[in-house]
Length: 261
Image (cartoon, rainbow, N blue to C red; front, top):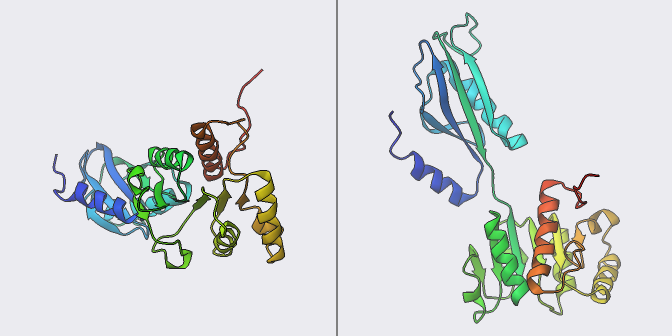
């Protein structure tokens, strides 16, 4: 079973860029087909084949279109292709039948944690375990505590200078500019902005955001105090409550118990 020698290297490189791509694999063949079971190809976010081989013009357009579909719903899809059809809409009729599984590899959400302390440390670890790209802004002295982080920023945080987009921004240490950074992140369109804060501090920040013109719609993206109500007390529990809220937000969950009866 031939496999392109650079296939897995290319997959690793694409994952490092955090751009979506899809892997198509031939899983069944009946009759005549240029593609064989086990053949693979990689498609980019535009549906163009980057590398690999699964067959000729008979299947290329169909698989490319399916790759684009999987980017939308994020789920693997199996397609059955009749190569013995007299129809020309897929290219040249080749004969036979084949099944191809197309697996989307979506961009990992980016979590930016600002701060230090046990809650931030555990949150970074949990984010990495759940396949988020974890970025941390902290002091040089604290940097070694974040071995799981993809990137550590030790200079003052300037959201305008970041070379990556942010999906989840958590302010984890009390700073005097938490209100201003929260407003900046919201203005930049960050989907989830959270502050680990007391109810009193949360009220102060929300008052500031409203005075600066933040709309009710914008404030829907602001989460403070951060996390779900787990009655968390220990730092690890607080980190879990925040990570749970992030997963809920990412997956469109409700946070309600799933128990029956």
